[in-house]
Length: 621
Image (cartoon, rainbow, N blue to C red; front, top):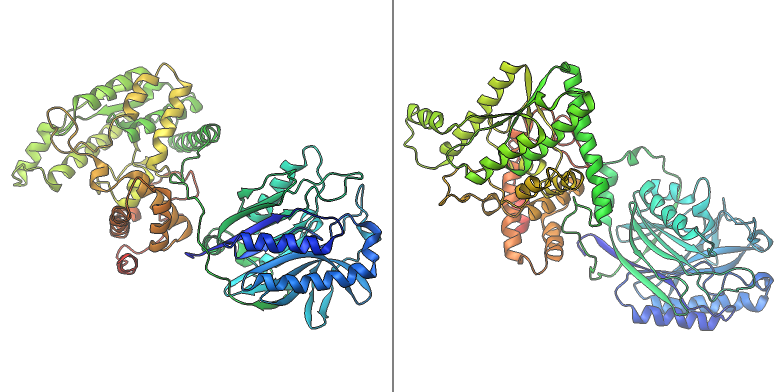
């Protein structure tokens, strides 16, 4: 559904050597969990991993096959991946067995056998590297990939992941979008964090989903302890992690976004340059439709955890200030930084970044020329905030009112002075003219303040605040701007009161007359809530998500806050504005990229200015 596939990683309650009871446990788990389309069980899960020389038992061999065939009836159209010892051409292999709809569809032997320290696998098993054939008509070998509908997946077993060159590298290069790892990994102090990083890292290297299930405490405790580690990862992100050391079965499930993986492979990586290998494709039945229960972060640009958010803020701030310092260093260190300081969020961030750039270059803060230009809609609150902030940080502050000059200009062009688009844009262009002229006069550059969200929506005045000589905020979305300023406030307590005052004020361009001294023009009432707009932006630009999918995810992410029709209305407006305003982005000034999403026509985003939005709107209709 909507490009997702639900998978389950299972560490079942194990009865060591009791094949029938192990089969029954697996059947019960599959019967009780009807949502996943694919179930992964651990390495040698039908028997247990720690049977030792009992693997040679003829009785065991016969019962394994009977249990596997019985299990196929439980699978139906769903896929079960089960670990079993399989004899093939006189050798015993540690295998992953794929079951569906009454059939054993394919068998993949383990390539790399653990045979060091506590492991003695070569005593019983042969390596499957290079093996390719069939067992009673069932495809057998390490050269198998499985295709269910349009989804392709591969299998590796425990040590394969820990090898220098894991088999999954070749699998993903050959089209596998999911990798399933059947494991029996014993527990040691510190091993879990390394194991987690390994799974996450492999999913990132392969731009794939990676599902991992390991044996639990039912294994022998003669010398080792098994915890039943389970993970589901997607392109570097752990979606789900199961409880360890449980005496009961542990089942975790997660929705892997296959569309997102495919888009990332096409757009953001050199995946297409990877050399594919020769794999046989085993065709399976298409997977059943499963409900999506995955949670979607309503603030994809803003980390949830405070420590991660602070770390991200520090890094972004460093990128912004270093890039600006580099530009100034190129022009000449005597260059001054001219900023239009409105008392709003974006210009505040630009000022703070400029301060840090000056610090990096050893320049005095007076080399920052902060200009407040109160106009026809400026309120006393923002005007005072601009002055207090500039004085607090030691910038060279100037206040240049523009009201009279704008009215003279409107009169000169025959405008009647009513508050319309001309009325608003005339103020923005007057401010830009002042900034440019002041930069020429003092030997400086105009530091732009517009953020990524405004660029996406075209919420800037062309040749007004749209223009600058270097834009430090062009890579920062609006939902993140507040957090960057808050991070500075936490580090600079002497500025904190004024910074928090600015953070708490409604977002507004203040281009329309105030209402009894209060802001009358609120941006989010015009173009929509920025939390929604940034959510749309993230999923559309980063992953190329379809409008219906964005709507579906937004409904989940903002459940209880916005209704479906409201979200759809703002989403339609987002697409209209995004397509209509590419001409502004095509003419945007230089600005630093700070995250994975940027809209510079010279770097990340290229589209025609006259592209039609019709297909995107039609899908929502």
